[in-house]
Image (cartoon, rainbow, N blue to C red):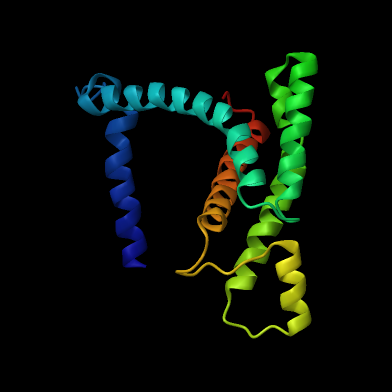
Length: 173
């Protein structure tokens, strides 16, 4: 109970000058060094948002062609559909036509790759199916295409997750 009370008092001490800064004669945070730093970070963040918007189709395409397999085929098909749609309509947002479906599929692919990495002895039939589909184990003897594909898969999912979160919460990009 004492820890809770101390935590609440510390929050009050930190928040009170921020709320009533002008009454106490304090300088608002916007005019401090931290305020200037935060505005620079916000401006840089807007440029990074645009760059991530431009890089997302390229990452999707690299992921689809870096390690050709059945598991990466939907990413390649999604890239092709987006590029054809963009070329026909000249609307840049058409590149991201299959966002939700590819996000679900990327999550499923990451889960399957993770499960295949576990130290579980799979039957020969399951190993054959996994190899046929395109699952692989990452080890010191892995090919660079497999490592590149898995890195771009995780990067694509993270970028797509943040992009969709911004759209669903109606934040400006």
